Image 1 (cartoon, rainbow, N blue to C red):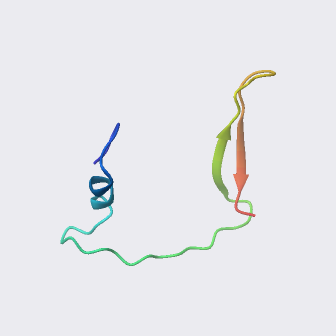
Image 2: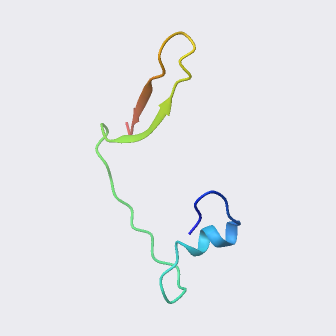
Length: 56
């Protein structure tokens, strides 16, 4: 497992099954108001803030 830095092959190996096979992808549908990621502002004009982006 990579904690600070690692090679791409090492990173990709963490997503394989115990027998070395690649698992099937399972897609899930989220509601439009589901948070997808958070961007943090620099706080140039005030305190830094977290901006939550939704799936919709």
